[in-house]
Image (cartoon, rainbow, N blue to C red; front, side):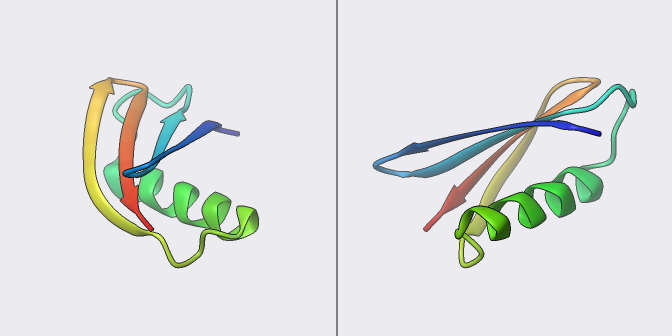
Length: 64
């Protein structure tokens, strides 16, 4: 189960997805984040950028 952290700012949302799985694919991180944001009520958020911050973590930015 991934660790998902969401922060909201004036510019949008930042989602940090961390998983024990080394070299986690970007598509997996985006899918997990989309499910989490939908549950939180942000299903209309649009992905702006995705950056691998280490082999276990993706930092995803979304606009609202």
